[in-house]
Image (tube, rainbow, N blue to C red):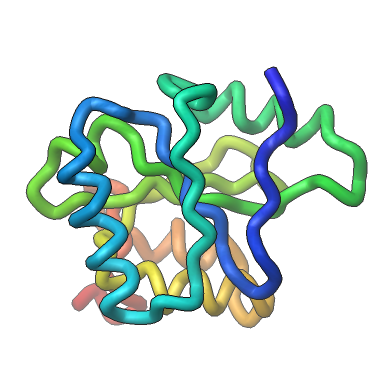
Length: 140
Protein backbone atom coordinates (compact mmCIF):
# COMPACT_ATOMS: atom_id res chain seq x y z
CA UNK A 1 0.00 0.00 0.00
CA UNK A 2 1.04 3.58 -0.53
CA UNK A 3 2.22 6.03 2.12
CA UNK A 4 -0.22 7.91 4.31
CA UNK A 5 -1.63 11.22 3.11
CA UNK A 6 -0.07 14.34 4.61
CA UNK A 7 -2.29 16.78 6.50
CA UNK A 8 -2.22 20.45 5.62
CA UNK A 9 -0.05 22.63 7.84
CA UNK A 10 -1.32 22.89 11.43
CA UNK A 11 -4.15 20.45 10.85
CA UNK A 12 -4.70 16.82 11.75
CA UNK A 13 -5.43 14.00 9.33
CA UNK A 14 -8.94 12.52 9.49
CA UNK A 15 -8.77 9.38 7.37
CA UNK A 16 -11.94 7.61 6.32
CA UNK A 17 -11.63 3.82 6.29
CA UNK A 18 -15.35 2.94 6.25
CA UNK A 19 -17.41 3.78 3.19
CA UNK A 20 -20.74 2.27 4.22
CA UNK A 21 -22.56 5.55 4.95
CA UNK A 22 -21.89 8.82 3.12
CA UNK A 23 -24.47 10.62 5.27
CA UNK A 24 -22.61 9.61 8.46
CA UNK A 25 -19.35 10.93 6.94
CA UNK A 26 -21.08 14.26 6.22
CA UNK A 27 -22.46 14.40 9.77
CA UNK A 28 -19.01 13.69 11.22
CA UNK A 29 -17.32 16.41 9.15
CA UNK A 30 -20.04 18.91 10.07
CA UNK A 31 -19.61 18.07 13.77
CA UNK A 32 -15.84 18.59 13.57
CA UNK A 33 -16.15 21.76 11.48
CA UNK A 34 -18.72 23.25 13.86
CA UNK A 35 -15.99 23.45 16.51
CA UNK A 36 -13.05 24.45 14.29
CA UNK A 37 -13.37 24.27 10.52
CA UNK A 38 -9.65 24.81 9.95
CA UNK A 39 -8.23 21.98 12.06
CA UNK A 40 -8.85 18.93 9.86
CA UNK A 41 -7.52 17.56 6.61
CA UNK A 42 -10.15 15.09 5.46
CA UNK A 43 -9.18 12.17 3.26
CA UNK A 44 -11.97 10.02 1.84
CA UNK A 45 -10.20 7.71 -0.58
CA UNK A 46 -11.59 4.19 -1.10
CA UNK A 47 -8.00 2.98 -1.39
CA UNK A 48 -7.95 3.10 2.46
CA UNK A 49 -11.21 1.13 2.89
CA UNK A 50 -10.86 -1.34 5.72
CA UNK A 51 -7.28 -0.37 6.54
CA UNK A 52 -6.36 -1.55 10.02
CA UNK A 53 -4.46 0.30 12.73
CA UNK A 54 -1.53 -2.10 12.28
CA UNK A 55 -1.45 -1.46 8.54
CA UNK A 56 -1.40 2.29 9.19
CA UNK A 57 1.44 1.91 11.69
CA UNK A 58 3.33 -0.22 9.17
CA UNK A 59 2.79 2.33 6.37
CA UNK A 60 4.05 5.11 8.59
CA UNK A 61 7.07 3.09 9.73
CA UNK A 62 8.01 2.47 6.11
CA UNK A 63 7.72 6.16 5.16
CA UNK A 64 10.70 8.45 4.83
CA UNK A 65 11.41 10.64 7.86
CA UNK A 66 9.91 13.65 6.07
CA UNK A 67 6.65 11.78 5.44
CA UNK A 68 6.13 10.25 8.89
CA UNK A 69 3.11 11.28 10.96
CA UNK A 70 2.94 11.29 14.74
CA UNK A 71 -0.79 10.57 14.96
CA UNK A 72 -3.99 10.54 12.92
CA UNK A 73 -7.73 10.14 13.39
CA UNK A 74 -9.71 7.36 11.75
CA UNK A 75 -13.31 7.43 10.67
CA UNK A 76 -13.84 3.67 10.87
CA UNK A 77 -16.86 1.37 11.11
CA UNK A 78 -17.62 2.40 14.69
CA UNK A 79 -17.35 6.08 13.78
CA UNK A 80 -19.88 5.64 11.02
CA UNK A 81 -22.32 3.40 12.88
CA UNK A 82 -22.31 4.69 16.47
CA UNK A 83 -24.74 7.54 17.20
CA UNK A 84 -21.93 9.52 18.85
CA UNK A 85 -19.60 9.08 15.80
CA UNK A 86 -16.44 8.61 17.91
CA UNK A 87 -13.21 8.94 15.94
CA UNK A 88 -10.33 6.57 16.59
CA UNK A 89 -7.14 8.46 17.47
CA UNK A 90 -4.03 6.48 16.50
CA UNK A 91 -0.52 7.04 17.84
CA UNK A 92 2.13 6.57 15.15
CA UNK A 93 5.13 7.89 17.05
CA UNK A 94 5.68 6.96 20.70
CA UNK A 95 3.60 3.78 20.93
CA UNK A 96 2.63 3.03 17.32
CA UNK A 97 -0.82 1.49 17.23
CA UNK A 98 -2.01 2.79 20.60
CA UNK A 99 -5.53 4.16 20.28
CA UNK A 100 -8.38 5.89 22.04
CA UNK A 101 -11.79 7.06 20.90
CA UNK A 102 -13.11 10.60 21.05
CA UNK A 103 -16.45 12.12 20.17
CA UNK A 104 -16.25 14.89 17.56
CA UNK A 105 -16.88 17.54 20.22
CA UNK A 106 -13.37 16.80 21.60
CA UNK A 107 -11.63 16.67 18.23
CA UNK A 108 -10.58 20.36 18.10
CA UNK A 109 -9.08 20.27 21.62
CA UNK A 110 -7.16 17.04 21.07
CA UNK A 111 -6.05 17.96 17.56
CA UNK A 112 -4.80 21.41 18.56
CA UNK A 113 -2.86 20.10 21.55
CA UNK A 114 -1.26 17.27 19.58
CA UNK A 115 -0.46 19.55 16.62
CA UNK A 116 1.53 22.00 18.76
CA UNK A 117 2.85 19.27 21.08
CA UNK A 118 1.28 20.96 24.09
CA UNK A 119 0.14 17.54 25.32
CA UNK A 120 1.28 14.09 24.25
CA UNK A 121 -0.85 11.29 22.85
CA UNK A 122 -0.47 9.21 26.01
CA UNK A 123 -1.90 12.02 28.15
CA UNK A 124 -5.17 11.84 26.22
CA UNK A 125 -5.14 8.05 26.04
CA UNK A 126 -4.47 7.78 29.79
CA UNK A 127 -7.36 10.18 30.49
CA UNK A 128 -9.82 8.01 28.56
CA UNK A 129 -12.65 6.31 30.41
CA UNK A 130 -13.04 2.56 30.95
CA UNK A 131 -14.44 2.20 27.41
CA UNK A 132 -11.30 3.81 25.96
CA UNK A 133 -13.12 7.05 25.09
CA UNK A 134 -11.67 10.48 25.82
CA UNK A 135 -14.30 12.84 27.22
CA UNK A 136 -12.12 15.70 28.39
CA UNK A 137 -9.30 15.95 30.87
CA UNK A 138 -11.83 16.33 33.66
CA UNK A 139 -13.89 13.39 32.41
CA UNK A 140 -16.72 15.70 31.32
